[in-house]
Image (cartoon, rainbow, N blue to C red; front, side, top):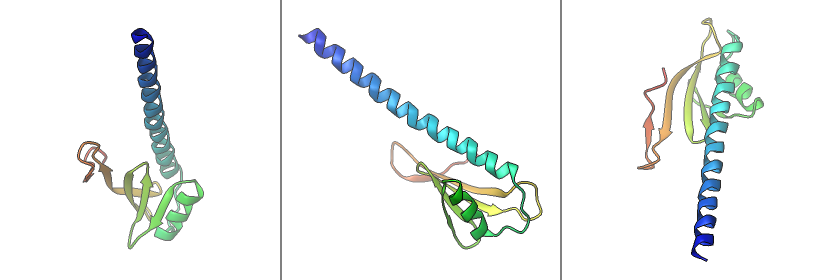
Length: 112
């Protein structure tokens, strides 16, 4: 009986790990898709409202703010500003992530 209980616990832990890895991998694919969308388009006349509409039409949660677009992707908040005449669609101004340990939000300094 004890052996059966241990097997059930191991199976449950394995299932939980697979589910959590699936969520991490899906977010990575969404970030890659977002970066591809940004780099593959160049519209010099685009303002913040247009940029937010483009993101939302591609199933991203984006809100135009005063001078930038705030995009929430799985708890990570990106702040974009339209590029104007520069290459690409926009620039990443800031990335804010929620720390899994403290549950506080912090600026992600790894993304440039």
